[in-house]
Structures are given as C-alpha cells and as structure tokens.
Length: 330
Image (cartoon, rainbow, N blue to C red):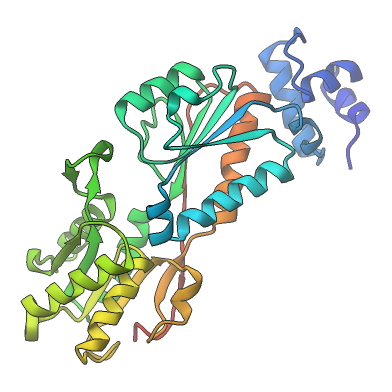
C-alpha cells in the first residue's frame, strides 16, 4: 500500500502537504492543480483514501420515501440500508432526515446532501441554498446543477422490448404507474412508460391499447390494473408485458394466474428490481437486477470528489441492470 512519502515524492511536494490535502484541511493553501495531482497519484498508487474520509462530516441523508412507499416497494428500504452501510464503511458522519422532518430541519452547516426520493421545486430550492454539494438518486434532478446517480431504467425497458421482438413476440404490452408531480395530484408520464413508447414505436410494434397505467407502484395496484387488462383485452391480450417494477409484476402474475392464463406460453412478463420475493412467485419472475451496492458506492465516490477533491462540475452516472431470466418468460 502506498505511503504519504511515496505520494509526496511523485507529486514533488512535502509529506505535510500531502497529508493535509488528503485529510481535507481547509486551511491548506495549495493550488487546485496540485490538489488534483495529489489525489490522482494517491489513487494510482492505491492509497487507502478511506482514512481521510473520516474527515467528511455533516453530511445529510434526505430519505424522502414514506413508510407506505417503503412497505409497497422494498427496493427503497434496500437503498436506505446500503447508504447507511456505505457511510459506516467510509467512516463518514451522516444524519438521516425523513420527509416528515422537512427541509427546514436540515442543519445549515451541512457540507453535503445525499437525496433519495421525490422533491418539490420549493424543496430543491431550499436544498440548493444549504450546500452546492448535492447528490440525487432515484430522482430526475437537474443534471446541470446537481450530481445524479440512478439505474438506467430507459435502457432496461429498451432491452426488454428487444428481447421480446427477437422472440417474435411483437404484440407487447406495458404495465406501469403514473408519476405524481411534486407529490401532489398532478400526474405525468413516467420515464419507463416513455421508454416503452419510444422503443416499440421504433420497432414498429407500438399499440396504445396495450399500455396499462396503475395509480402507484405496488402489488395491490399491479393486481388491479392486470384485472382491467384481462377484462379489456380478452383474446387480444398482448403476448408479453414489460413491467415497470417487480411489485407491479407480482400483482399482475397473481391476477393472470387466478384467471387461468398460461404463463409464459400465452403471456410473458419481464420486470425490474429483482427483489428477493421475485424468485418465489409463480412462475418465478424474469427481471433486471439493479446493483444497489454499486449505486450507493457511486454516490459516495461522487461525495468524496465533491468534498475532498473540490469538484464543482455536476456529474451524472447511470447504472445498467443485469437480466435475471426465470420462468415468466420463454
């Protein structure tokens, strides 16, 4: 493992300078070029930067997921657990705030913010006023102002469509949920639905009648919207469904099983999230696995770049999913 002395020799500065930079000493007068070079050499030589991460304090974790949302989709709970695990591994002091606490409760001395969930324009304005070091995940933030880490949901939906078309299943449906704008009654098209529309249109297999939108992402709403699809489509039922999340897909499978549909011979299902229960439903669900550990590690890497390397230019990172094929598809 590299030492402070080795880094100093490579950069051409004193060991004291290297030590103070790596420990985020704000009183250390050093050029941005030298600071960046120190970090580059430290990374190249394999220096354990976790030792200096303990200097990162006053990080706020805004977990804007309600208890109801967490119960309906355990994916979010997995995000919360992994974020707090990564903070502990990196020895970073992090305070969690709930939506019920409100933005005004966040310590004004906060050095950086990690934000999970959906935020109103007013909340975003307040967040920006607290600190410029903000990393959003699971939210379509302004990439020109903030760092962003999220699964590449658009790519996953496109890969589903490609998969079904390659099988000759060109009569493809979509089960998703609307997006509530700014946590109020206003609804808008969610990115997965848009990706499905674009992908099927490009493949010349788009059919408006094959799109079914639930009120929210949950097993209960997946079941209800699937029953509506069965009632509406009958013999015209799509041969395959791209589904926005496992929670919706599990509810849909329940409805189709109750009504006696043959899965996957007559109707196939492909979903996103790979929650633990997806392997135990009937039939086991084909789904995209999202590497939550990688997603959260990326958030903390961006955090370190912001606070230890003084990066100010926003950066967006999209995490691809890995398909896990099970018996809900042929």
